[in-house]
Structure formats: structure tokens, C-alpha cells
Image (cartoon, rainbow, N blue to C red; front, top):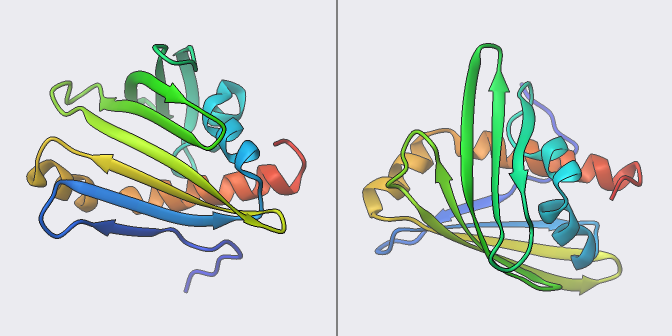
Length: 162
């Protein structure tokens, strides 16, 4: 039996569109959550499943900027890249591509709602190329990386790193 002290994200697929929506609340301000997503030193600490290490290959978090990062598991590397289209105080719009499937570009919109009392709700929506691609993401075990990563954000918030 697995026990966690961190809440899990809700991951939903739209019934007729190639969209995945991830929702999770945090004991954080919107500014803290946006910072966790655009600061490369923070991003590499929380992104991805437990047990993998991360490397930032390049990172230019601004409107029109681009990024690339790699998750490393022993001899295996998983690289991802994209472009930042917009970054505001409560929203990030970017593309996301797994290097092994360069034709599978998703458009991601992350919004953060201030709930008051130091709490925020993060909603990340990924528009995939097709329902088949969306369903492949869902079958990939992505929920492990999402929940492990968000738990690491909780830990970074708790220790004052963000």
C-alpha cells in the first residue's frame, strides 16, 4: 500500500477533443507557482517522476523564448523542447514536444487562480495533435510524473526554496 502526504492532481480527458486537463491545488501564491514553472533552477528540481535526474539544455522563459530539458534515468535520456508563447503573472502558454516524436507538438496553457489564504489552483490544459496522441499520453503513465513533480513543488514550497 502506498501512502502520500501530498494531494493528487485530477487528470481528465475531454470526451470529444484531444485535450488533457490537469488540476491541482497548492499552498502557494500564483507568483510562486509561475516561478516554479519558468525558473530553470527550480524547474529541474521538480519536473518529472521520482528517481530521474534533470538537465536544462537551454532555457529562455519569455514571450518568444524557447526551452529544452532532459530527464535522465541511468543510461536512458528523455528530451523535451518547446517555445514560450506568453508568460504573465497567472498564465503560461507554451508548446511541448518529446524529442522522440517531433511531429507530436502540443499546445499547453497553464493558468493559476488565487484562492486566497495563500492557496492557488493550477489548471494545465494540453491540446494534443489527435485523440490518439492524447490517449497515448494517458496510457504512458504520465500521472506518475505529474503527481511526483507536484509533490516536489510542495516540498520546495515547504522548505522556502520557492
